[in-house]
Image 1: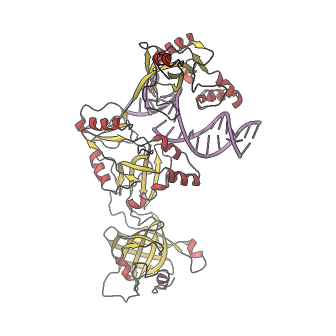
Image 2 (image 1 turned 135 degrees about the vertical axis):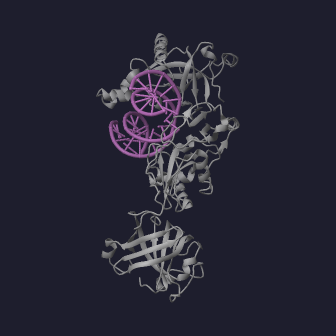
Image 3 (image 1 turned 180 degrees about the horizontal axis):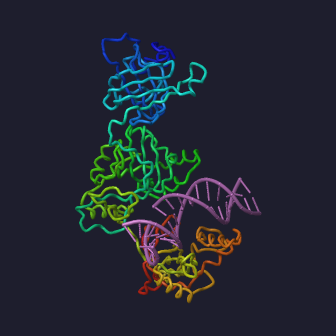
Amino acid sequence: MSPRSLSTYKDKRDFGATPEPAGAPKRRGRRKDPRFVVQEHSATAMHWDLRLEHDGVLLSWAVPKGMPMEPKLNRMAIRTEDHPLEYLDFEGEIPKGSYGAGTMRIWDHGTYELEELALEDGKVHVRFEGERVHGRYVLVRTKAAKGGTGSGQKEQWLLRRLDPADDPDREPMPEHVKPMLAKLADLPDDPEEWAFEVKWDGIRAVLFSEGGRIRIETRNQNDVTHMYPELTRFGRALGSHEVVLDGEIVAFDEAGKPSFQTLQSRLGLTSEATIKTRSAATPVRYLAFDILFLDGRDVRDLPYLERRALLRDLFEDTPFWQVPNHHVGDGEALLGAVVEQGLEGVMAKRLDSTYKEASRAGAWRKIKRQQRQEFVICGWTEGDGRRAGSIGALLLAYYDSTPAKAKRSKQPQKLIYAGSVGTGFTDALLATLHEELTRREVKESPLDVGAPDPDSPGKWQNIRARDRAKSKGLDPKTAAKAKRGLIHYAKPELVGEVEYTEFTRDGTLRHPSFKGLRDDKPATDVIREDA
DNA sequence: GGGATTGCTTC
DNA sequence: ATCGGAT
DNA sequence: ATCCGATGAAGCAATCCC
């Protein structure tokens, strides 16, 4: 790489195809201070190009993560070929197939003062006077590159800011965030104090973006960035902004409805190939509903509405990332629409609330569209831990037809398994249930369809018994046997009311919770009511 | 190789 | 996820 | 207000096992 010659620059380009300037080395004008430019270059990989006017050309480095804005932070910089001076003003689209194809935008420009320039020694000290960058910086060639052989090898440098950050109040971006939580509740009585959003049935995801690159964490701070390649380009859309967003990763079914079930084929993937095919078959969308950090400012202390305003202006919606709407005041209308469309529910957020990490204290509420109906109790699983000797969960079922219909069609009623419920009872109720069910215990399963079958494997067997068996030192085989004894059946006489969100594809209840025994309805009248 | 089981994560 | 109970 | 430990369904990955 020889300075003052643009041969490398020209060799790499076809000036019939690219809008980039052809240029030639120029003699220094009367200009006092040399100029510099930082261009944001969305090419194969997002990066920034730093160029310094010197000796009739632009000395150039590609900086993958952009200009460091605070001291002590090293950013990698790859020395690239000198560019012509005209490139100081270049902005535009480099067409596909050309060298450096992609969008080039001027991120900052200005003048700089040269304090030291020793390219041979791998050392450049400058003081930038730009719009975004001002201060002293140093570029140092790394030892690794120095020892490298061959002139064609790219030189690796480090770019570092020497002066304190321009903004003394600048805060570091948080590395992890525990998402704020919502309390299950009804619509607030003072709706004018609240904003309402759709509750999206996906997975909670905090998105960090820095230097055009994103990182996505689940609510438990698990890194799932690589599981959603279709979101990678969101980083480019955010450019050099440093941001932390809170939102939801959502998949949509054929009908265009958000569907957790659909999303599930995207969860827990590790194989690169599988991720690729699944992301193509079932792409997800990132719905950003909050912003927690922006360009050196922790905005979690701003009230909800102000955060929403920042968020709305941060990027343009695409099919892959969007800012879903919020509605101030009218929660009932939104809830009505949500129910009508079969969505999961509504979030209510206090207009004046700040973002409180991991807090479920009530500034956010979730109002869920719950289903509830009666089910026949057909048995139970034995409990564990403090439930030992009592009930773990109740086996639930419903009849496929009413007694009248069964009579007309001369088909006997069939009991259909509907999953089990293991929460919602007080200790007292648990005791009552245990007694009532024990009194009705039978050997054979009363279930006709989807019945838990101890002799064939199935997920219904997935009860905590295996854990208990293990803690007793039993081998897995014995544990498997052991758990067969942990299901008890009962005459299908008791009727209980259960709240749930929906039936799964397999016909069992999602998020079931027990609401109480009902004795005002004969068991044989219990049918599925949701469809 | 493939089915069953277990582990872990999401909700 | 939901829930009850303990802290 | 928060935490803890019971419990639910479902999917993928790793391992077990024949």
